[in-house]
Length: 306
Ligand code: CP
Image (cartoon, rainbow, N blue to C red; front, side, top):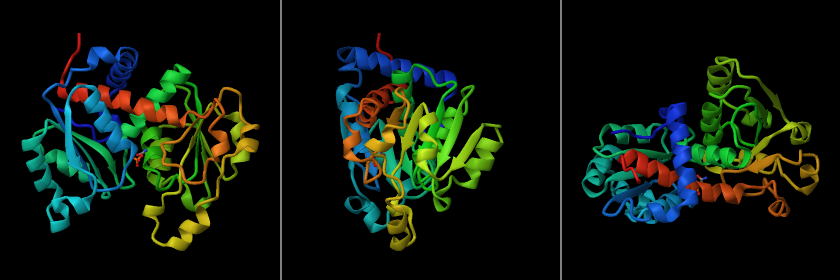
């Protein structure tokens, strides 16, 4: 039995198989419509979510399975003081697989060590968000056709943005990858990523503050929102929240084939006028999230569809 706690739990070969399966699911949805009949997915969300929880649920329903779960800590026995380890032991009696989101780093790891069913980390604090990474990778692969030799710009809250940390970890495994890290000084990518991942693996990167200085040279622009819920005080958040706004004027500086990704939710960092630009693929990205989660559920449950 295997869990997904970190994007690096999947080797490059396993990831490749998963993305191929997601591509087949997209092309032949009817083939998979009953693959999980009789199986149940539990979604245990201690933090708010729209995309991750609902795309997991849509994924299981698309596979002919059923879903159960809770959408907030307040609506579960966590409100009475129940631990994650006790909760997952109980969920293991009710479901075949579980996706968990929790504000504390490492919560999914704790759950996995007390679980008799596969556990999927659906986001643990500012740490990792592996299924968003799978979504991002499927989006890039489907629309660009490759991961190697891409120049990827990450813009916004690179300090607290767990999707950025997870995607950097996944992309450094491909040759010729290069990063432009676009953030204000206070929201720079943390040292454990800069020194521990980028420097340690000799990955080329530059850090800049102005989006205008980087955008003309990118294959992918990955925008992020400033993570209000991770700030210690509201004043700092208010000062930082509109630091970047991608608008039509900035898009005019961007290459014709650059793609704009965003894990969503968006706040102000992408103007709605950009939505009509064919390079803006963030809503397509949300759709890819369903296919890749379908592929992940099948893989972790060991279900093969002929
Ligand atoms: N991208 C993402 O994790 O969105 P939600 O917080 O809505 O799940």
